[in-house]
Amino acid sequence: MSAISIRNLSKTYPVPFRRLRAFFRRAGKDPVEALRDVSFDVETGEIFGLIGRNGAGKTTLTKIVATLVQPTTGNVSVHGHDSVADDEHVRRQVGLATAEERSFYWRLTSEQNLMFFARLHGLSDRAAKQRIKDLFARLELDEVARRRFGELSTGNKQRLAVARAMLASPPVLLLDEPTRSLDPLAAASMRELIRSLATQDPPVTILLTSHNLAEVETLCARVAIISRGSIRAIDTPRNLRDLTSESEVVHITLANSEKISFTRQHNDELLDQKIRELQSAGKTIVDVETERATLLDVLEKYEES
Amino acid sequence: MKSLKLLPRRIFAFLARDFRLYVSYRMQFFLRILSVLTVVTTLFFISKIFAGFTDPQFSQWRDPLGAWLTGLAVLNYFMTGFSSLANSIRQEQMQGTLESVLLTPINLPTIIVASSAWDFLETTFFSFLYLFFGRVFFGVQFRGSFLLALLFLLLTTVVLACLGILSASFAMVFKRGDPFGIFLGAGSALFSGVFFPTQLLRNYAGPTLGNISLLLPPTHGLQGIRQVLIEGHTLSQVTQPLFTLLAFLVILLPFSLWVFSRAVRRAKREGSLIQY
Image (cartoon, rainbow over all chains, first blue to last red; front, side):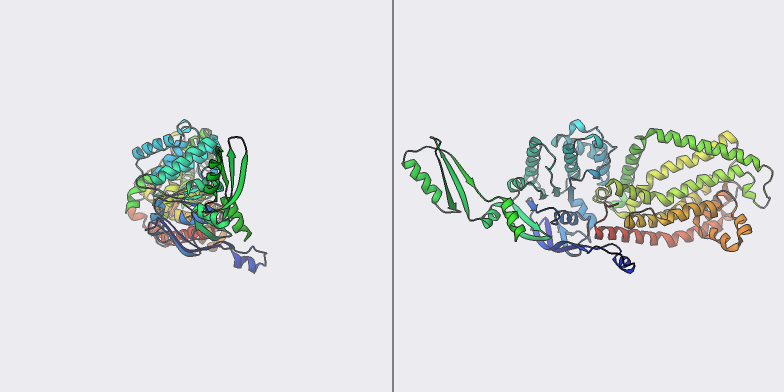
């Protein structure tokens, strides 16, 4: 069974009180179609990336999985539980971390904030305290445990959001740009944490949305590209890149600083052949670089189309 | 079943959170105590104007200070029952924390009960303070069964909490303060006998306006509480306001829960839980 199963999901945000507005001849906005016939599965322990431009539908999709928004048609199930009919059960399975700073109580400390949410999850005070302590250690938040949320740096606020999502040890984590406000070192350790969650026993399934395409490429086994509410492609990052461009540029640097560049097709033997030629000519290779299409190129291609 | 088992822990979570938020503004607590004392003292001096003038037909108003203090203490409680949930939903919407709360595996009845728990605790304290200051500083006498008075207080508060749930549904959908609040706030003070006997309204304004008071649950709650605390009536003598309140409860409780679940569903459909 898939950890997350999404079938023919569509979401159109209705215009509130549309008939009333029409009655008073007030100009109204049109309903907004945020998602259109989205279907995919995320397997247990998989880190699945969702990329797309602002307004593409990533947040709506995440919120539907988290039961915060109801779909117009289609359905989402998490470990077999429907997100509408069995929403309470789904909420036990899912932790959501967003970059939304307003989702905490600013006058409470980090610890008090997490304690409140731990109790709502049904954790006993003893279990909650231990869990919070572990999470603070894991996310390097010990020093700010007793500081008010409003006094935290943006990066620490973001880490606290991830800690909250992990409070009840949910088998599914929805991470919305988890490294957006982190410094490079903190971002690296966050990526390491995400990787370790997916490989631990039992593994955590992660749906990751990010604008950091390099991060998605590094972390995710599969990536979905979403554009104007529709899924345009789902595959491994490598296959997505290959779909965009069948060739790559190779730069070889020799010991005497001489540089040789050429274009090769994926999976051809041109690179092996060049290396053999250079070695038989007695030249020493010090570096080989390839310029491949990136996920950005892939994203641009789908946006253009 | 599991939700029911976890209910005390979740109520405690909200209580602990709200207590911590409350004490983060310490001055407010002391200013409010001072304000209750000021109101009680002012009413004491106003009551001296009416000493000896009370119409014998208004037996509950022989000691106007006692009647006012009961009225104010109870009105305070009723208004909390009525407005607490709407206020806390509105506040969570404005703070942006409503989504985070709704992300946890708690059901709607738990949210309804737990969100208001602190307000009730706080109001119990301040309502008690009205009676306490009246008794200790100005010699107001209360008699009768406090348990029976408490039963009336609880029943009326639950009935008003149902109207509060309707009010919260309004806030959830329209993202605005609601019209019920204005109606019940001003309406209770004018029509429910908080500051003067409801019979006076009927005598001066005619039966149509006078009968409005009968449609308001606080009228029956206050009548019951004063009958018990001021006139010393027993259970068998207060069945009329008791059954009226029970009738309000039977109608309003299922209706308000149904409306609230519809309001949450609508907000989820519109994706507007976090909007304000």
